[in-house]
Structure formats: C-alpha cells, structure tokens
Image (spheres, helix red, strand yellow):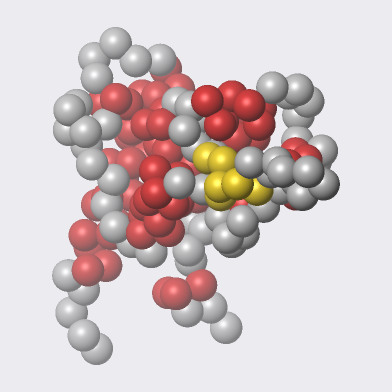
Length: 147
C-alpha cells in the first residue's frame, strides 16, 4: 500500500535538471557528489570506485576540486594518502535537493531560476512548465483539508 510519503522521487528528474542548471553540473558530476555525500572523508580511490561507473572523464576529480565541489582535507605525507571532503558549498547543494524532494517548492522567478529567463532552450522551457505544475501540486497538498 502506497502512502504520500512514498512519493519522494516523483519529481526527481525535474529537481535534478533544476540543480544541474542552477549549479552548472553534469549528471555524472551530480551522481558522484551524491555518492560522496555520506562520506565524511575520502581518498581519491573512493572517488574512483564510483567514478568508474560513470561516463569516462579523466579530469572530473580535478575539475570538481578546482570548482570548489571537493576540497582537500589533508595533504599526502610519506606513505599516507591525501584525504578529501565535501565543502559546505556541496553539502548545502545536496541538502537543497533533499528539501525539494521533501516538498519544498522550486523558485520560479528569473532572478532565482535561470530556467525562467527569456532566452532558454526548449528543454528548459519544458522543465519550467513541469516546475510550475509541481509547485501547484505541492501547494494543493499543503492546503488539503484534514479528513
């Protein structure tokens, strides 16, 4: 039997696209950051374990590090390897994803959401239509009368 709380992933694709546009990330970048979210600290080997499942991008780790999505916690010293962690920028982005999946609305103003600008791709226009529909459903569920 399905309950309303079982519907977390109904709008995952819409939320995922919004996050990718908002933060200029690829699907693979987002996937690997979501994987690393539960890791307090990790080595490049842990990154590579999951990255091997994704599309080949030899520079993904270094690009994510350069863009501030991954930061070095400890330098390599002797035989001990370098240790990395996700900075507050990344954890806040992922927490935002979870809030949206939990029923928080996606902003629809041009200043807060590039998908609502005038000169956007056809794909972004389709997604923004779905964002409007999703937000309307969220508002309706929030104001539903108790039975």
